[in-house]
Length: 347
Image 1 (spheres, rainbow, N blue to C red):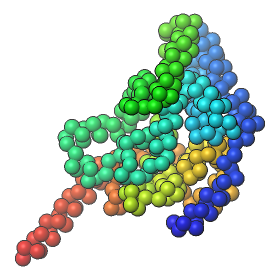
Image 2 (image 1 turned 120 degrees about the vertical axis):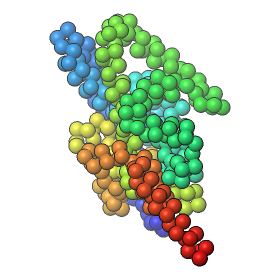
Image 3 (image 1 turned 45 degrees about the vertical axis):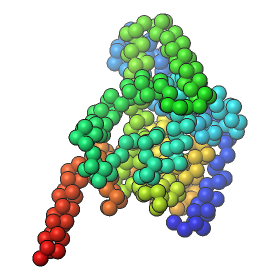
Image 4 (image 1 turned 90 degrees about the vertical axis):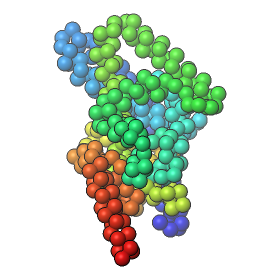
């Protein structure tokens, strides 16, 4: 993509990068109170049917995902005009969603600055290996990678590790502000959820809060996974990497039914978000619809997104994700070609 087109594309979405405080407040009202209402009805339903309680808990998980989108926008400074307001709301929504605000803000900023860059992977990303890296890896590293990429591990155990371990710890050598914010978030989580635990008891707590937060975390991992793991996703080495191409070609347009699009805060327009992180979630759809170049982003649906579960490794030669079987076929084919060349040279 030429420099002129890059500049023009940024200009096209610039009008959408301004927060609308009225829309932000309305979104808070139609998102956070419903979380507590769903929890209330879930607790009340326990005396009638545990399955009805599960229904309200699952509904609550959708609103927790939507709450996370508010948290996410705050980390980009896009939800309100004022930084302190974003920081305050981000920390509070981080308590509800179990995410430390400053820690995630830093890691997510690194993700945006290096997304699809093969030479800058490791922070804020889903673990991706290229075929060559996998071939050169030790047996232990391959086993760990296979386990990590297994859907039952990633979406089954992953949510527990994320909310109980990873989000509760600071990275090494972090700034004091980030470290203290993580401590503060952990204390507030203990006080907030501890109070609920004390009032309703451990069984009701596990059924309602346990289901809500686990499902919400699993959905969050899935959304993050699918937004960057599709067959022809863009990845390049540092020397060839381009920020705009990484945004438009390395992030998907996840077309969801209206209800799910609303619950996920329009984050399916992920290509728009990566191009301009300062666009609030409630402006993403309009930015997409009024900017023709953005409509060429890879579109995936609920059905087609399931294909991504097969993808395990990235092949820089074909510029695509492949399954382990396809990777083995590629490796064997490469070996045969090499042997054929060596054989012909020896003659």
